[in-house]
Length: 236
Length: 384
Image 1 (spheres, one colour):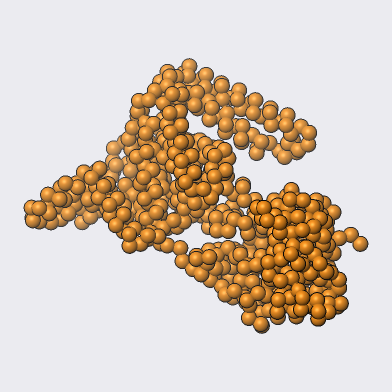
Image 2 (tube, rainbow over the protein chains, first blue to last red):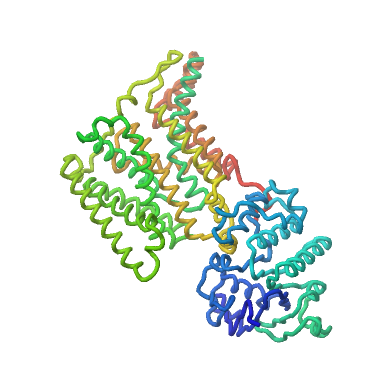
């Protein structure tokens, strides 16, 4: 079985400070992989390196067997990597509908050929349909998170990068988000790389990688995730 | 009634020139946040384009359709200023994003270069150079993609530039030979003569509406409607709005941000070119014509609220009406027997340049109370 995403020996720096140290990681299609670790160990840096916002100094990122190290974020997005950043990053002055449309930009032909919004996102997140004409910046945190995930899914990605999707969000929306992510994986068979602190959500992943000081220090199926590992790497 | 109408018309006329000049800047400065001091010179290039087009239409072959030259000049001025703007973005401004002071200095330098360029290069040669640039950038876009793919790419590119250069040289030579007035460089101001249908005025309600002013108002309305439609309804408009609000996330969504930058800057610059056509209809065209508009443009954009087109529109009309109110001493006409000291003050400001001083002073005072302009950005995300 070939991997959807394969990273080997990745090193990323912020200026002179060494953040990621020789990270190896892989994600298969149809698999949910969770990245755990305390604050500041480089989880977000890893995701930013994968989407292309940060340029790794060495190492290789293979997406569907092709090296994407030199590609700009928009090229990786069009190749099939979708990114839901920490803090959602909704375009504030655009309406919810326009924000969703922007998700279509990653499809072949871009926005110009894909102007309709796939109704599946309303099925996953019914609240979005009610707010279509509101400004994205006026939504609450939880609504913005749902919008950000919906936006990412509209580009029919092959790999979804989720950075702390449940951080600071009320519990009932956390459940909606968990259900939506599971359903998407079951229905479309995409790979998901998730950064998460909520133990409940972590348990739903197929495999986990634990990070410490910029390196991967433990990994395995989440079924084997013992309480000691949890205590060591999750800040809850 | 008549007074009100006349005042209103003059104000709207002054305002629409301002608005036309500031519209491009509202995009470049308002949306992209680039302080482009060469904006005035892009207006100047548009004005000179009108002049050259007008001379070309005076040639015997084109004499019968001379009256339509303004219609040809508008798109040409858009292209000329747009291409210069794109070139400026690619070579200078792109390297300075996020450094407003350096951008300010660099674009000021560019504005000086452009001023000296029209002084020391014959307009015929400049027209040839422009044709080369337009064709050189345009041909690869027009040719079918298949021809450009593969190993022949370099050859095709070189070939298209060679063709463009040849076209440019031919145009420069032809123009220099045919029209003696643009064969040699001159720093003197030139005059664009309006076609016959644009001279004179239309009488209505005992007021004469000068036709050039009406034409400028029409151009401005069309431009504002066009820009609004483009930004709010078109696909590229949505991309532009997304990139200006959140560059890195837009990139992650698959929007080619560099292409968006070039396009945005090109359109803003092109609009400056169209403003140049309007300016050339009002007075003589010289290398310094841009300088007299640039301050007003920045005033309009800041007063309207940076990044807000509606604000820009209202601000320019407000400035226009106020300028007319003060500049023509309207208060004295309304209230002829006001106390002498007050009448003296009103009279003192009742000239075009003093009215401008007064208006700018009022704007400065206004910005003390509303630093973000008439329409500041609102919403949850503004602070973030």
